[in-house]
Image (cartoon, rainbow, N blue to C red; front, top):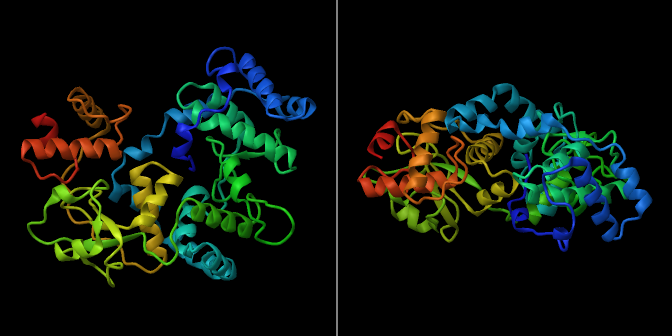
Amino acid sequence: MRILPALAAILLTGSSTFAACGGSFSGFVDGLKTEAVSRGHAPDSVNLFFARVAQDPGVLRADRSQGVFQIPFVDFSRRLISQNRIDRGRRNARDYASVFDRIEQEYGVPAGVLLAFWAFETDYGAVQGDFNTLNALVTLSHDCRRPELFRPQVFAALQLYENGNFDPARTTGAWAGEIGMVQMLPQDILDNGVDGDGDGRVRLKTSAPDALMSGGKMLSHLGWRKGEPWLQEVTLPQGFDWSQTGLNTIRPVSDWAAMGVTPREGALGSGGLQASVLLPQGRNGPAFIAYPNFRVYFEWNQSFVYVMTAAYFATRLEGAAIFNAGQPDKGLSGDQMKRLQTKLQARGHDVGKIDGILGARTRNAVQTEQKRLGLPADAWPTPALLNAL
């Protein structure tokens, strides 16, 4: 699922003079049409584009039902990464070897990275979603939860329509408006769409070369650094300072090596690379070192557990061994996590929405409270921490 965090900061020029989120759906659509014309789109084109748009309650239900991200990393990764998916990924790597070679040469993105997204987003193109894309985008723009994320995508879809690459009645995809085999939003398609198969069109739903080349270009534009690693499993020494783990602590690889961080396979990245040590399920679970390319994943999806799993799966497809799951301490249920978030919020921590999901902000708050209470500060919430609070 592809949603740009940067879009959250975008306020459309002059958009305050048009229909705000909420209120009458038809009135909201009229406001979008007025705004589209003010942006220079022909009235006839705008009317045809919005002629059959309708609110989709199913989109709102899907947006409110993302409980899968409450599952901890070890369980989540085992659910998403099957031997069948690995075998099919490796087969696709062979079948599209020339395409992946082009992607790595032009954009610096390894095959495993795109194969992992291809697998997780649409099961290698088999499940691309059947939500009407325009209805989804307008529904989410009208909804007041995250309109700033989706409203710009409506106008990007209008541009695709005028370019002949979007059918308001027939274009379908995921509930959040992403289209094609690697699930790209309309603005991403405008900015990064590539005709990978040379037929003169960018067809992300039916052409794997188009979808993969476009995904590679998008990752490159999001900051992917050619020739650098993204994630690697490591072993940590006895007596390691757990408070140094987490995305907020960034050190040169040479510093981590001096602290006793060692790779389970191969060698650590270049000593000058900046990196963080991550413990997705605390000090007794698996451990990883995350390089700058890892952070690009958060431009694709903001869920920590999804990003960890996608990045790890990419390493598996590139030949890495199965991680050492260890014996993580018992975590919290969804309801317990909500109670914890409520307690953390009451102590002044910004945990975002009380949703039962262990995201980056909740992890930061957990680690801070663990330090204060004298508990191992590994950012993994346990019943002991909840009781201590």
